Image (tube, rainbow, N blue to C red; front, side):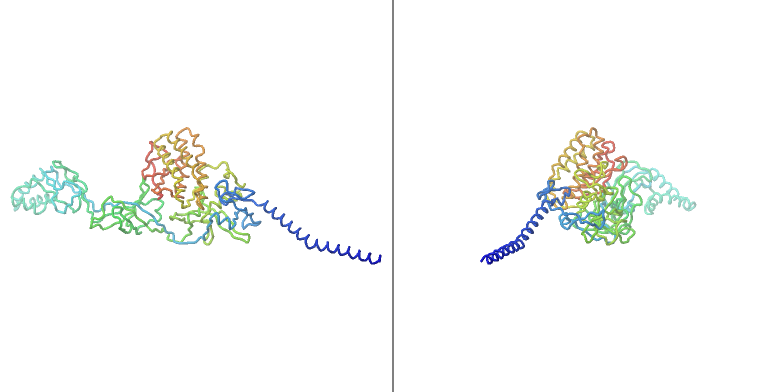
Amino acid sequence: MKQLNKTTLITAFSTLVVGILMGWLIFGRTNTKANTEHDKVIAEDAETIWTCSMHPQIRQGEPGDCPICGMDLIPLESDPNEELDPMAVSMSPTAMQLAQVQTLNVGKGNVTKSIQLNGKVQADERLLHTQSSHVSGRIEELAVTFTGDFVSKGQIIARLYSPELVTAQEELLEAQKIATTQPALFKAAKEKLKKWKLTEKQIDQVLSTGQAIESFPILADVSGYVTEKMVNLGDYVRQGEPIYQIADLSKVWVLFDVYETDMGFINKGDEVKYTIQSIPGKTFSGKISYIDPVIDPKTRVAKARVERSNTDLQLKPEMFASGIVEAITSTKKQSLTVPKSAVMWTGTRSVVYVMQTSAQGVSFMMREITLGPELGDSYVIESGLEAGEEIAVHGTFSIDAAAQLAGKPSMMNPEGGVAMTGHNHGGANNSPMEKMPSTIKKTSLSTSAKKSIEPLFESYFSFKTALASDDFKKAKQSGLALKSALANVDMNLFKGDAHAVWMELSSSLKNSLQHIEHQENIASLRESFIHISNGMIAIAESFEPNSSPIYIQHCPMANSDKGADWLSRAKEIRNPYFGESMLTCGEVTKKIK
């Protein structure tokens, strides 16, 4: 009995131990695994960094809104361990999508450019005539008394009394009496009258009547319209003195202005399609027959001539004309071209971002290039790129901002270096001119966004007008108003690619305006206005916010003869850098529609 109980006890104890062991194997390991995974999730959540796709300098430990622009924060994706190039900036597909990065393969094509020309209708200089008096005398009668009247060749347009002509006719009558004995004298007397434009019929009339013509008729040498009357009744005129200007308008010239920057594209024989402002709905065309060999030193343009038949007199001198030339460079070879939106430049350097792909993902490398001629919405590339390479054409500001923050080579910091945060712009020695992005990224804006920057331009034009008027007090007030208007722009109204462009341009303009309240004289205001104008020009060309045209004007003598630009609502030059001392110094270099 005792032996049985002992055996039973051992068996029960063994069963208990086996049960405990099996339970631990089944449930204990599962709970441990669950706890381990839970701890891992907690650790991952604690390590997640949230950032803004438009402002990568933002770093937060939890999700939320960007404190700068209000956009939703996204998880920060760590850079791959290995990049295609250590100096390239990598971007995840999510970041590229949020920044609206678009790329394009560089290709070769014909270097053509649509050039808009402005000009006027003018009379053909070869058909302009001066009607002069062939003898000296007093004007007794004027048959044409106003300009614009049409005269026909041979028509009597005036009569004059000439004592010299009367004497010459009397000499002819005397020579007639001895014509049989002195034929040479008689012939010489007749030739003298012919040189004074008397016709054979008039000479025969004198000889047949035996009386001199005292009121001598002046006949029109050509047919045309009188464009200028140069004498009045009773005036005494000398031989050869002009009486009328007569123009034959059966053929006219259309003279177009060609700026220096377009001279390489405009050639003799190019076709111009043009319209006349006063003849709406009709398009004319013609070929350039002549280009001035000399550029006007004041307007900096050369004239391109288009000849046109005008027998119906539809075209009248001084009519305004607008033309388009689909021009091609004189080299007529295929060249590399890229969109303007792909190019970023600081005034001394032009750069693009070239896309590189590897097993680790996509990265972008800054590449310095040399720009050739401007082709409307694109540039010719002289060097720095090869056909087939893929570059960023949209979202370049976002890529550049990421490069700056990562300490990689960027537009403002070409050598790379310490990652940039806050207001560190790559060095304390950079001037506002160097910080000003000159890339023109034509970006559409909503109506509300355009309205928000209207006060910016109103204050700027007031600033410009005050400087041109040498009014320091008003100029400073306008400058402060411009600074206030910039601060009041709602950046949340700028969406997508426009947001990145606005952040870059507004930041540079803010730097140019930061010391405006400390300026103590108009000279220092004008120096600041150079950089302010560069910023406003970049904003105007990028967003085209005004419904009416804005003109970019340039003075080559401003900024210590380095030249400086400004914006104007009118074509008329009112120089803000010199004021009354050189008020009209400058030229229009571009029109922003």
